[in-house]
Image 1 (cartoon, rainbow, N blue to C red):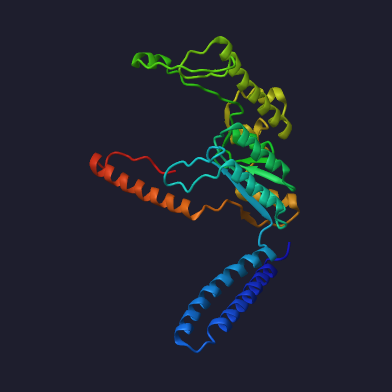
Image 2 (image 1 turned 45 degrees about the vertical axis):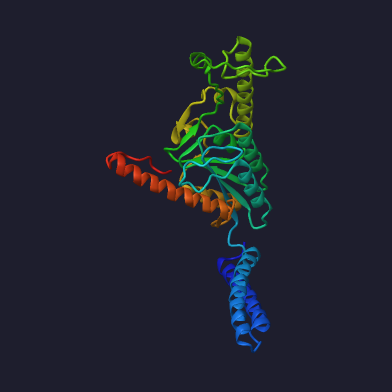
Length: 334
């Protein structure tokens, strides 16, 4: 890793060279013409090209002289395949595929030597969690997962693919278990006079349908699926975290504060983000690390939609407070 001053000077020189080339080319192409209108158009185009050249130069300079050596990828909120926004004010939560893509991009970046995986999630779907865990496990370099708030269920599944897991004293860690559920609206449908007919082939095709009572064989079948996922979860944790099978099962899917989780071996170390950075520097045999956050870019249309939703949310909250009264507390935005 080059010294910071060399990186700064290198980036500045590359940006200035590309900027000068862009300005000179635009001036030669557009400003030398004597006609006033052409000159005006030329000056406008000169400004556009100059701005574009500056941005391109900055991008190229950043690639030639990267100012980072460690990537950070965040897993925040529910873990799903299609993402899940918490509220209209949220900028959108990356889905599992986008998170995997960012980890892979970091792995392909020659400047990245280590990966920090920020986990603040209550969990989520099984397969998307396993996809993220596998991507972290494939990363070619040291990987440290850390949480400041909560690393539960699918979050802990992901952590099993990293070299270390750090937490704070008051972090919530654990919930090594699997949950399945179903609605039963058959009695309500009877009261409303609603009938439901379903045509299936295969004995368990409609197992779990909310419009009928579960048979014992169906209940056993569905519970078996949950148990299989749970066994897979235990296997991932015991192998990735090097924990005893019985010890993990004895947690009974409970959550623990960071300090107790550390005592149980569910967490490797306790510390803040600065301590995590120091640990990564030690692993890379460096005095310090420079972190670059890898996150998916939100398309303009989606950013615009979120902006409209935020305005609508604020307007609705304001109207509601006027009608209902100021003493009513509106839900906090996450």
